[in-house]
Length: 498
Ligand code: IMP
Image 1: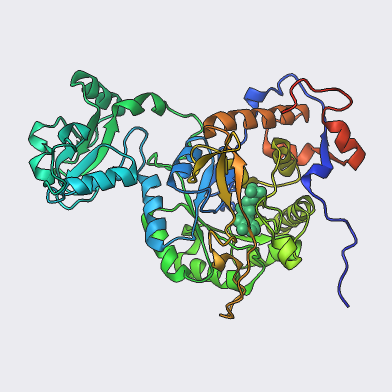
Image 2: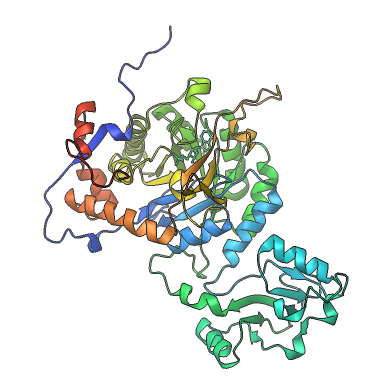
């Protein structure tokens, strides 16, 4: 006979936090949001720690290199989506690892033998008007010149005109040597009235551009998440099919952490993947697994070697897994059970495996509830998809700006590996939708508001760290009637859009 769990499975909106004593030193600017991302090593410290408890979802419509750079600069981490070719994913990882504030690895490069027509189509494709001309047309070939809009006249120049006949050659360019600081580079830009300054190494190989317009955007960021060489940290999604080729390529490109991406992670496919990675790389490669919704699933992945475990089936905003397959669990209930399993595992083995609450965060206050319920960090898709930095188009729909946001299990993403149950039976059905989310502006500005709310709630609970919050939080279930009481009620709102 089937086993029945008679406890109702619940989600975040059904809970609230009860304020604790706020002492005088419990103020938002003393709150630390640092939190472990991966398993603790022998010294009782996580191998990787986040400065804010957010990671962006392993999704085409959320996590590319631009999102990864923006989020790491603000203390979180992106897992670059794996539903693309290994080469393309590697390229995105490289771009993040090569990023240095103000030093831009050029993505628009040609050789002197290319034509004006190539310049125009590259400009249209990449959106950059400054093109580096190198010996081999790559971002690291010998620098031979640059082409900007000032070098050609579309109305009179023939489209088959060769680049070498109109580029500004190296001999006429002001360049800087690798090792130049951002301040020095900017002094050169001002002194010579340049728009861009190419930086080359001692052999004349092209390394970076420094652009005049970027300078103001690149002030130091105190919460930046970077490694010892000051390179930003970045993660990558992998699947249980091509990991033997994908993992070495991603590690070679500098990925700091991997995560197996699947809607149902309680599977022998995940175990095989974890065991393969651990047998090839030992503990030097960190890899998370999931998603699971109960203690059994958590322990299974931990025993197989997971460095963190992701929790959540069917709660994502674009997710229709529950409707399609009838599997899943209320996100809060799943999280509470897995957090207990994590604590019990820690008590009995001394090994702390962080857990991630993935999907279903619809309000900022859900984030602090998830942390109080035991999540070490949160993975979010919808939240990040709304920002300038997400990879999707910003559109005007019915008078409002929106961004596109589609699930990995939608026909648009066609990430069938994520939903793979093994075998090649060809059974494919959608588990996600294609949608819009309201456009919300810059990641940095939105994060500042969200993190401000989280810190303020933590102070109301009398806590100044995530560990304290987990240990001290008092959480109550709320009735549907009291949920209504939680919003503005029994008044006529002046702003109907509120
Ligand atoms: P959100 O933050 O509520 O938008 O949820 C994002 C999460 O939904 C992701 O991190 C995935 O775990 C999950 N997800 C992504 N695409 C799909 C899909 O197509 N179907 C079901 N779940 C998805």
